Image 1 (cartoon, rainbow, N blue to C red):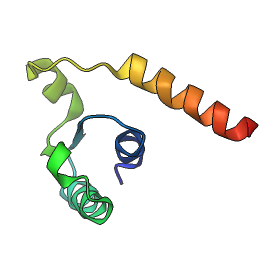
Image 2: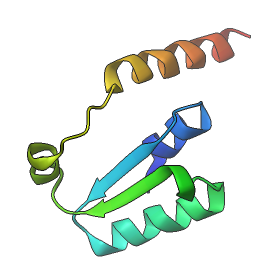
Image 3: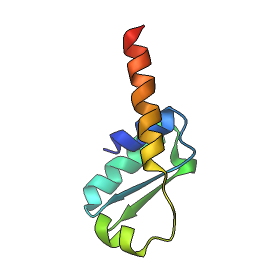
Amino acid sequence: TGQLGIEALSRGACSAVFVDEQENACKLIKENLKRTHFEAISRVIKTDYSAYLRSCKEKFDIENRMKDMLIYGIKRKLK
């Protein structure tokens, strides 16, 4: 569904790459990106994630982004 990536985008991530080897999953992710208006800052790649990561030249800052999301979620829950 792309739920985690779309959530990251909704909380300020500048872009997201969605990787799945199933055609139906990629189609659903694309539909959800269209509904949420995040198509322009996202890419959907149909392949095995481990193959993608082995060949990918991009750097991803997942750890810091996840910390930001966790802190944001905790702050919202405390309110």
